[in-house]
Amino acid sequence: MDLSVVCGGKTFQFADLKDLMAKANEEKSGDSLAGIAASSELQRIAAKQLLSDVTLKQLREQPVIPYDKDEVTRIVDDNLDSVLFDKIKSWTVRDLREFLLNENAENDFLKSLRNALTGEMAAAVTKIMSNMDLVSASAKLQVIAKARNTLGLKGRLGVRLQPNHPADAIDGITASIYEGLSYGAGDAVIGINPAYDTPDTVARLLEVTNQVIEDLSLPTQNCILSHVTTQVKAIEKGAPAGLIFQSIAGCEKGNKAFGLDNDTLKEAVEVGRKNCRVDGGQFMYFETGQGSELSSLSHEGADQLTMEARCYALARQFQPFLVNDVVGFIGPEYLKDGKQMIRAGLEDHFMGKLLGVPMGIDACYTNHMNADQNDLENLAMLLALAGVNYFMGVPMGDDVMLSYQSTSFHDSATLRELMNLRPAPEFEIWLEERGLMHDGKLTQRAGNPKAILDMRLAKIK
Image 1: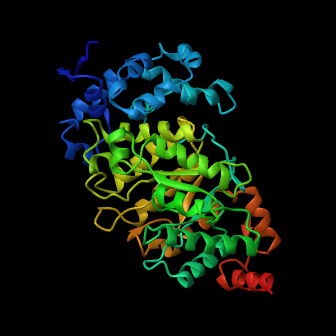
Image 2 (image 1 turned 90 degrees about the horizontal axis):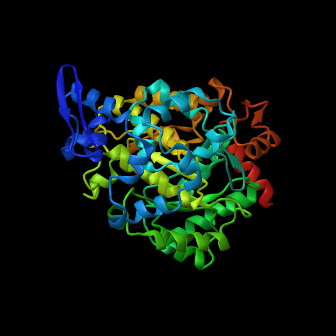
């Protein structure tokens, strides 16, 4: 195919679709680090112009990593809805964008389209969309997920209660859980990043969080975010888990760097189906982030946005309850400032929803990025408007174990009030019955962790 175009009086030639996709990406420090970014704004515009005319069939036939060289490419392509794809294969990337922006959320074809798209297709259309396009289209792409409660419903916003502690100290973790619950956080999951990745640590933290859930009759689930193989060992020995977690990459080489492959994930699914305490609901939890493949030198020459989209296409095969893009966590090598962080968060949320996974976003940044609290809050407000499934809930927005800045319990409560959003319906009932919420609003009793402690003590007695 001819990959040359005249733009601004200059002729631009691109080596292949992978090169074209990279040059069409919005400015990202990670692509510059990899040496694949557009050399000028004019070249970027030219790449977007040419990419708009590429067909979905061409994107499927020329993935950024060939079918015979990559497990992720094979998994996604083998599971594509070929009947549905035949109906859209002649669409250009421009056609896909127009369809997404013009159709309403009740269109059945829009809802089923996710099963006919690869990561490359989702990435390509994202590259020719503005921030407002991404928010507008995302708001139509509802993805509902069910475990012990229901996330993704219209007018709802979930929160992962993230009570991390640098020493995995039970008292500190429990105190953070009480505070988070008092603000209405925790309907997505009570999820802990452990300081120590051992089966014994995972089992101990699962037992502690499960006991809180049982004592308070909480309609939520727990998860300890260690390596999937560590969790499986703990669960097989009887540790009470709600969800099973793993970070994933958009290619086989990247997943090997994470210490997993498709068989590892399939084994985890079987363990979860037998043991996870979600009463037959969804139980897998994946985390991603632009730049993770480049950080392990496994990006295969592809841009970080396209590799991120391939993560969501892979995650779709395992019907997860949660998928979370930790957007600014890796640092300025991949997203150098608040502007790039905001753009990446909107891109990733849109691509995940377009590909059919229940997306949450960790609106966050590291302290050595050129970003601040206002950037974080701007992204959070835009994502809430776009219909994101859930945010993180971190004490004071400062994770003392992972050393990064994220959304606080207060932020999530404010976003719900500002945009008239409510917790998961099952969780809202729990809050209402305990006087912490009334008609979707937190009461005067809310925000006091002692209220939760007293409830638990009364139940134990």
